[in-house]
Image (cartoon, rainbow, N blue to C red; front, side, top):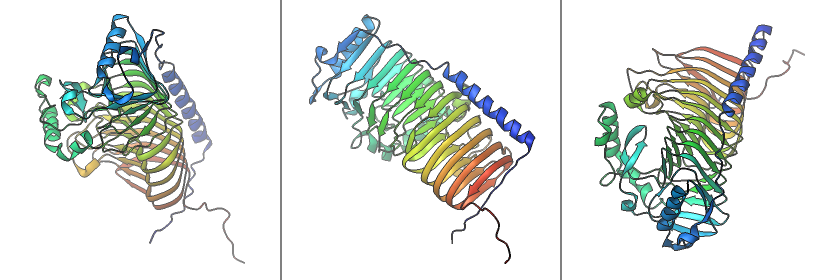
Length: 452
């Protein structure tokens, strides 16, 4: 039988109030200083129509040659804005971007990628679940570029539901091989996957890029993660819509990346809406580039989880801000921080403010023992600040923290938390210095009754 635990905790001393105000000012100043470093790229005025390069939006003509020609022209002219007008454009193979390029997908336009694996060869340098390797090219790929924009009201359709998405059933052998290469520090030149393997390519990947804008477009039917931001910085993503229901169709996956603004996004994903990563195990610790300075605000979450940190986060994650977000539908978990003792690294200085969910399984969940596995490299998880978070119903648990015996989760601050209905209110193990201020789980207890 479900039991409702009615809790009203208040640690209300003048000194703590002053400390709270100082923390709020510190949070806002830190956030605003980060925002100063996130500047969208200037879009070229050198306009090119994709149709002038032979593209036909009839859903039948292969328009990859037209894209290749247009991008080559942009390269020769030091930049350009490629206009994709209304129509359905078949793209049999990847679009490899160049510096100073904007692709504008006008209303009614759709890029539909072909499903023949050999079209995405030769292999390119990429990363797969936190391990660098050579694999099939992402469908839209930018490597070591600056000033890239994908904008407009059109759609990017990975067309992967009946092709690449099904590779998940056959990927285990290659997946384990990639992890072995990671742990054994196999030279990168020997990590060749592609043909004969089943590691699904990403839909969009920016790798070692700077100054990126993704705005307005709809993203759907991805073969794997939708937008992978890898070792990149100064990124703005706004007003993007996701309808991505294949396996592992995360929305945004920042990895080893910094100075990112994700705002006004309409998520509808079969997996994590935002999953912040920083490399896996040995390679992540060796690379040592944390994902940091990421602001997620004014978004509507819907899918598996709202915001996730991990589990591949071995180089560390810090300075993450989740603000003024709500929900567009069900999420299994609202905010989810996960690691295990194979990862190492740290998760710290995480700020969650003014966020609302409807029905979830678990509202707020931290685990340092993800999948119950790993040893030798515990993660340091501390300095998490959660303020003004609301949830209508948590079918399993409200607040969960699972530390590790030799590395406890510490310095977690909850304030102004309200969960209307919940099976297990709180479950904390291997923790220290967990602070509460104004928590209501279940029905608020008001004036006490008295004997008549």
